[in-house]
Length: 118
Image (cartoon, rainbow, N blue to C red):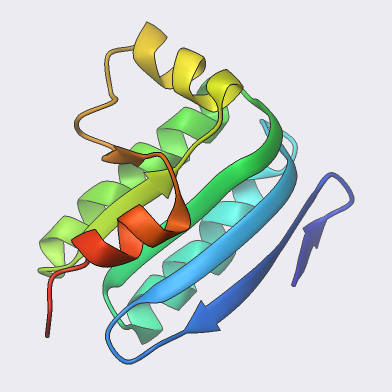
């Protein structure tokens, strides 16, 4: 799925979770489209979400803001929201002390193991 020129991704739906793999920039330019697409995907379900940001080159405050909104939306829907990260994303998230709230994971396999069973 092409979100913007600077942000691309794929969506893989499994039995009780959906996995998104993103590449590029999660910034003020890509945030509105990203939020719209992700909100619809969360509404469609399943409500356990893994967001693989390990290939993201840059994330800014707009990107962090939408991640917080999506994590809250997943929690409200009795789901879970995990982020597979890289050093750059981890550093940005830790600067604003959201690493626990955003459930940062070291790899997709770890995140899949942490998805609550149905």
